[in-house]
Each structure stands twice: as structure tokens, then as C-alpha cells.
Amino acid sequence: MSHAPTAGEPKRTPLYEKHVALGAKVIDFGGWAMPLQYSGILDEHKAVREAVGLFDVSHMGEIEFVGPRAEEAVQRVVTNDVSKIPDDGAQYTCTCREDGGIVDDFIVYRHDAQHFLIVVNASNIEKDFAHFRAHAGGIAELSNRSDGVALLAIQGPKAIALVTELTSGAVPAKGFTFCKGEVGGVSVWIARTGYTGEDGVELFAPSVMAPLVWDRILAAGAKYGIKPIGLGARDTLRLEARLCLYGNDIDDDHNPHEAGLSWVVKGRGFVGEEALARIKAEGPKRRLVGFKVQGRGIARHGYPILHGDRAVGIVTSGTVAPTVGGAIGMGYVPAELAAPGTRLVVDCRGKPAEIAIHQGPFYKRAA
Amino acid sequence: MASDDYPDDLRYTKEHEWARVDGTRATIGITRFAVDALGDITQVDLPKEGEAVVKDAVFGTVESVKAVSDLFAPCTGKVVKVNDPLGDSPEYVNEDCYDEGWMVIVELSKPEELDGLMTAAQYEEYLKEQE
Image (tube, rainbow over all chains, first blue to last red; front, side, top):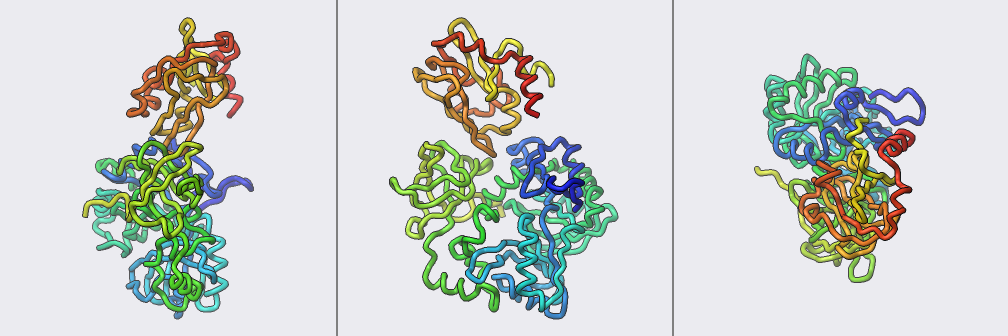
């Protein structure tokens, strides 16, 4: 990743010029100049659900753990059970404070017991690196590789066919595994992971080679109907798949149990373990729920959730759901009002919109 | 900026609405600039026939995928017609903001207010200043 020439300007990924040349609407996203949209959010969303889309997610950070005790070091800072990750495997997890608050959520990639890579949220790179160093710095060697690594996501029902063609067959066999490959003569890591609810891969390439790889993917993807996808559609896609966005749905003031992420609290000996065990035993007081708006209105981030006349919670994410139809969202409500089917109201700038609590992903791709 | 982005027969507001005056009535919509800024429009909430609108006051909202925006009335009067098809087809605003994407027709109670709005040339100048 390259940094913008002047101080205070948003940072640029190695693909910034590509976005501008493609006519993207570029916005400042957490200090990064990123494409919000190219052809339009709905058009891009549809391309990923029906064909294939290409995302620049090079703003995300990469932190490496290396050394004989690398596995122990990773386990010290993540909530999930690291011993369950095979070589060339990946796992979704959280990293927490001593009090159980979520510092970040991410995917951990294991090369082998002595070499791990964690792909962290862009806005949390410095925070996570400091957190990891404080708790695991003495156990393994930690390096922030964010500047040297570009990350491209290829997602959609035609993604695997495209990647198979691009890499002459180097495709990770199943979800949450990765392998080495080559795109246009550039050596890359290909992981079968993503953030859209579709099958697809995320591709790690050296920053300097990223523009070449980007062009190769778009050229080879033309016959599959590939489109470049901005952050706008990335948000509608991930919300339909009911995936959390750090900073919206989860943050330092919320713990995995109330966020519905108890399934990633399986490890032993990690920072926050005691607090999380206590929270689990007591039962969380509030819960992150998904909801569908029943009539008109779009319940957006920050809108109050009402039960009768009483404000009982807050919307953390909300948007129209292009594939599912209607409007959907997520938000925190008291545990006793979190049962699926519960009807509540969101105050949409003075207009009430009835919502029904929804369990599980709003969108699930056909198996 | 191509001039057909901002037709000469309309008057414009700083909030990016347009008004097309026909006798004592004005048709109201939002400009190409507003549509481009909003992106894909997914819901349009408008007043009902017979309701009053007041110049510079909020008379409705437009929801796009990424944001919600208020609509500010360019003139004072009573709503005599609403573009009901926008309820099911809000994308008309994206596709054709000056024709199929019109929003309401208002019977003007203060026609002189329209004189205070910008011409197409003035609006384009205003947009340049905002850049």
C-alpha cells in the first residue's frame, strides 16, 4: 500500500489509479481513499450475486506471527480455538480486551504451527498491532506487513471458474483453506474466504504487482461478466449474509456473546477468557439481532429501536436488501426482546417502521 | 457539464430541487446533480394530494442505498398531484429525473417566489462554486 503524498490526505491503495480510471466515486473511508461505487451499488450487488465481482480490499491490514511458539502467541490474543486450524487453513475469530470487549474481528490464516497471518480491519491496524504486541510480543515475532501486501477479493457464483482459469487450476479445495498460485506471472496466495455470502477467494499479492494482477483478473473475467465492486455493494452484500462490520455492529464496548459470536469463543488461555466466561454464565443483557423492516422505511445506523414508547436499543447496520428484497438491518436489543419474530419499531427520523427480528443470514446461496 | 443535464425551462434551488412552472402550477423534482450524489434511489416518500408545502421546508424524503436525504420545497402551495408510480418504481428518478422522475405538482399560493430561484445557467455556476 502506498501513502498519499501530503499529510492529512487519505491513504491510497496500490489500485487507487485503477479506481479513478474506471470512473469510481472515491470516498474517504476510515482514512483511506476507497471506491464507493463504479456502475452503481445495485448493479454491482447483482453482479456479485449472479456472476462475479472484483474488490480492492488492500486497505485491510496483514499482521504476521512467526516463531516456534507462533501458535501459542496467536491463541493468546484470539478467542477461537487456534488448534483447530489445519496447515493452509483459516478461521474466523475475535480478539478481545481483558473485559471481553471486542478489539477486532478477523480471519486467521495458518501456514504452519510456526507461521500465521492475521488480516485485520483497516481502521484497527495500529490498535491491533499494539494489542498483539502487548499480549503476545514476547512469545513470537510479530510484523505488520500491511504496506507490502495488496488484497483483492473475487466473489460470486462464477468466481471459482474464473480463478481456476487465471491460475491454471490452483484453487483452494474448500472454504477456509488457502494455497499458493500464480496470476500473470505474479506469485500470490489464494484463500477461499470472503465477505459477501458468495463462494469466492481473496488473493494476497505484493503491493507493487497489484495493478497487474487487477488488470489480469478484469480481462480474464470479462467473459464471466465480472464487474469491479465498491464499498457500497460490499456493505449490502455482507449485511444480507448477516456478517458483522467492525465499528458498526461490534466494537470495544460490545462482547462476542452479546454480538452472537459465542461460536468463536472456543479457545483456552486467551486475553478476556475469564470475563467472557463470566458473561456467558450470567447471560448477556443485550443481544445483536438481525431484523427485517415490515413496511416502508430504511432503518439506518444509529436510529433508535423502540418497544412501545420506550427506546430499548439502537440500529447498528441497516440498508435496502437488493437480493432479499425490502430493508434489513442489525441492532442491539434487550435479551428478553431478542426472540425471532419479535415485533419492534425503529424510529426512522420521526417515522415509525415496524421490524420483525430475524434469525440467521438474510441471504444464503444455493448449496 | 452538458447543458441538457440542467434544462433551460426549469428553475433551481440550492438544495438541488427543480421547478417547472406552468401557469399557476409548478412540477417539482430533484436535479441530475442530486441524483448523481445519491446513487441508486430505493424509496421516495412524498406528501399526499391536498397537503400544503412551504418554501424551504421539508416536504418529503428520498432514500438511496447509502443515505437518506430530505426534499425541500422550492415554493409554497398545495399538492394537487403526486407521481404515485415512484412508490413502486423509485428508479425512475435515477433514470429520468426531469420527466418520469417528477415528484409532485403544486398549486402555487405565492407564484412570485419562483422569481427568487436560479436559472439553469445560475445553477450550473452555483455547482461550480460548490466544487
